Length: 337
Image (cartoon, rainbow, N blue to C red):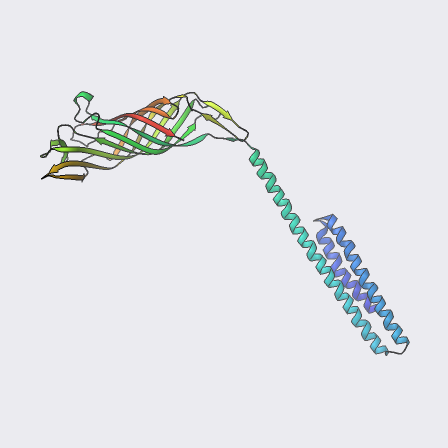
């Protein structure tokens, strides 16, 4: 019986005390329930072992079994119930570990939900907005002192088009009277020469010359990739909702002053004419001695998303020793949200 008691004590100490110390700091309430369940398991197995030993002793007293058989049966019973204690407590420990893991996940999930709710509760202040830039109108090129009346290009037939993406950022955090508008855009500047002429490139020189056939169309086009930057002035209306705040310039006067800089990315001529009764279309690509860098001044004044738009190239279209022709454009500009 002493051997049985020692085995039970060792098993109790090995499965009960270390786990209690390990979990005590984690969740006292669950540890207390675990203590009670462990004690109950040990009590049940001890009671079952006691009844088994009593039954063996009765058989021994009635000479149904020998002393050696009785000792063997008692040892087997002790090992059986010790293993029962081990297995049942292991199941209990696994259940506790599962509960603790889920409890940690629940707390973390609750923390995330709380944090997300707090984030959603914060009001968002939109300081920068994105817009599609569209502009189109009349285009021309003038020398110094030259007026639109004596230009070499058709005022109504020469046109420009611009498309890009721009961002508008208010300069001051809590005021919108001054905004910075900046972005990237493509400029397509077209010139239609007068008097049936086309551009001719000879070495470093580029000049207009009358074509040998009657032209239905003669158009010279320059394509630029530029970065426009404007300071925009004007009133606005503050809009507040539960989740966000922004400033609206809808139906408000706006004035923008600034400029642009970039690169010339290509030039070409388009010719249309009849030859021997057939219609001919030609596209002539070349360098035409144009400047690679383009830069200039621009400005606009308008209402809401539309405005009157003017831009002037400070760089000459053609390199020296050619005449200093400067591109000028007047049209409408649209900043589409």
